[in-house]
Length: 300
Length: 300
Image (cartoon, rainbow over all chains, first blue to last red; front, side):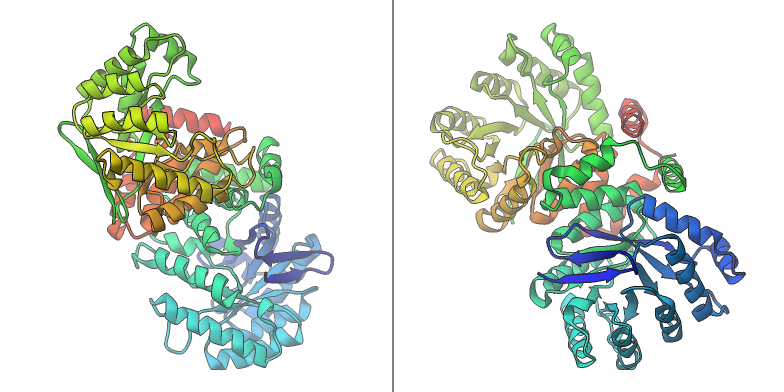
């Protein structure tokens, strides 16, 4: 039984075994979103605000915030975006950057216990990121690769994750504050990527006994009907022991797969959340509107 | 590695470990379909023919055929329906009745190796059904309940399944010709039904080493957005080892959950089937038309 608590100033959520699955909204990320990237670079965060509200309305339990824009002042933008999002919602945030200075800037303005995304098993990274995580009493996403790269052997990735958890302890960070990302590769490129991820998630849950998360939509990169693959993967990963994912709550398949898996794993007593969600009229506002537009487009 | 081969006069399919998941179309069944029941009773099988064509167009690998109509001559109707369906398609059939005389009438006209649905662990049933299965060299669906009823303990249901496989051997029927139905109960009524089914499927696959099937949509009986629960359940059940299901291939969630699980379990090399299915325009004809109508209705 491992609980990872993250929170804002006003609200805490728990990622944990036997807990309902946690969806970390993936939308606030300029990667591959030219308009958003241009707006964020100019300090126009209106779309960020809309994405935050939409994902929360659609059922996100936390929000990932990423400001990775080429040639932009990522630390400043990330800090500004975090302050903006925290000014409109008490939903906990996942501070997402590959640049340590940006993680630091984000942590310095963040109110509450953040989830830092991410640290790898590379020693230089560990020595830069872990002290920040400890200083701000945050939790951290640990990606199971290291100096040797990303192994296609889930057992090698397990050993990397194990070492990150051990190194975290050296910095005074408890295992329950390390959420391991098994690193999901596109099944269209690596045919065994699904089996690798599911096997690794199971070992992380049963042997290392840590919480897990992943960028779920990576699994379907390059394939048609991506949401179909993403949904199947999420349900199977939850069955393997995954306790959270960075995903798009505006996609019906993501909601069905995760809330449905909670029902089937016995984490939705009397199916109360499922019935409430689907008996009531759909959430209104941009979240629902965009969800429907995307659904229609996918089915057109 | 257990392969269950069923077939028509012209075509064989294999239900097996490491094989692509087998969808047995559930639509040719008057239960809860008043119009179809009335038509079948009058000998009008036009809707049966349309349901057969639609399910095959939507990707069914086999078709379940049920003629359970109150106060009707079920053996005659079932035999007529089987002859009609076999006259228009070489897709293998699952002969579905709780009445032994109907199973017998169906087997007598069936061309090929049928899947008989079903026999329970009740001794009287075993002694009536198993000789028929053996005589016609068919395969049989074994439902894991007996004189004591349906246990909520998956380990008790496992022992019932084990005994049916042993009794089948007494009648000269090989274990590979017994496909066990773990008996999926509605999770809305029995909150642990999902966990029970998943645990039992895993034991049937890893310990008894038999193929499995189930009426997948039972899991969502009484809940809203049933297809969402059905899809999550199918992906999780395939991950647990389930190798076939009686389900509705016209429902997008069923297709996504099963073809998606095949992709993620490494049973769709290079994702070729997935890409072919979703890159091409949707199947034309009634199957596609009805699938779309149902999709819209569910989302209305």
